Structures are given as structure tokens and as C-alpha cells.
Amino acid sequence: MVAHLLTPQGLDGFAARWAPRLLWTAGLMIAAGLYGGLVLAPVDEEQGEAYRIIYVHVPAAWLSLYGYMAMAAAGAVALIWRIRVAEVLLGAAAPVGAAFTALALATGAIWGKPMWGTWWVWDARLTSELILLFLYIGVMALRSAAEDPRAGARAAAILALAGVVNVPIIHFSVEWWNTLHQGPTVTRLAAPAIHPAMLVPLLLMAAAFMVYHAGAVLLRVRCLLAVEPAAALAEERA
Image: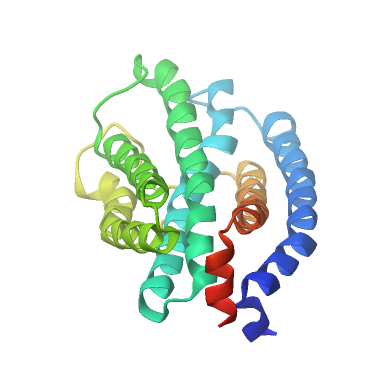
């Protein structure tokens, strides 16, 4: 089974079977999470109704990091073992992760306006998240710029692995530097500093975004495999 998935044909069949199921499941989970966060969750004492953007912003920010690590892992496999499907997964994961990063930055700006009085500050967390978006864009650009798809994938994989250093910087930026961005609430080692009625929809949205990420990547895999040059597929069969 695993060996079959390591071929373009096997991965395409797996994606065809699971991508629609994951996307439909994610849609139902997002609807439930948004209802819990926007309707059932209580109003925050300090931020009022404005805090509810957390149910999109925080899961998107988490997925921007998770998506980058998944992309970098695919890049490592592509570089070390020269597995073709890992190169395809790298290319499929990049735009999905970039979309989550852009969503995190946009919702953060919307949230920051009433809280900080400005759409943007060169805060350590915001700046490092912006760099993450540029890394995603760089991976996509490198992969598409090369005439040889495999050479482009290898160049993109190198950049993806080099950019991994930015992930812990984003995560720990609020602890390492004095920033406007609030500190960790859900992921801190002690008990989360958030009421369970607010926490449950947030975790549901995070799970929904993870499921959506998987489904969207598999859908992108099908698109990339459909346009792969015949020579690359012949090379894989050989």
C-alpha cells in the first residue's frame, strides 16, 4: 500500500478518493466551529465582540506553520530519496500554506485595528509571519521558474528547508521579544488562559482547517499530476 502511494498513479488514486471527502468534512466542521464561536461563545470582557475573529485568525496562523513544516518535510524527502511524489506534494502544499498565511495576516490586521489603533506594526510576530509568506512565495516561484520541473522542485526544497529556521522564531517571538502581540493562551504549558466555552470552538476550527489543508493539498496534487510532462512519468515508471 505504501509503495503504491509512492508512485504518481497511486497518489493520484488516493487523492481522487480522499480529497472530496476531506473537503466536505472540513466544510461541516467549519460551519459547526463558526456557529460555536460566533453564536454560542460568550462575549469577551475586555475585547467585546471584536475578539471573535480569533476563530479564523488563530487556526489560520497555526496552519501557516503546520503547512510550512509539512512542505519542508516533503522537500527533505525529495532531496534525500529523490522520490517524485514528494516533489509533487511540495508543489501542492506551497500555495495552500501561502493562502493560510495570507489569511492569518489579513485577519490579524483586522483584529489589530480596534485593539492597537492601526492595521499594521512592525511587531516581531507580524514581521516573522510576513517573512513566512515571502518564503512560501519564493518556493512557488523557484519551482515554476525552472524549465526542468525536477530541478525546480529541488531548488524549492532547498529554500523550504532553509526557511524552517523562521518557524520557531514565529512561535517564540512573543516570548523572546517585547511585542504588542499577546502571549500564548492555548499552547502554553500551564492550563490554557481561555474559557472552555471559547476554547472548544477554537480547537474545532483548528481541526477543521487541518482537514481542509489535507483535502486542498490532495486536490492540488491531482492538478499537478494532470499536467506533469510525459517524460517525468516515464522516468518514474523506469
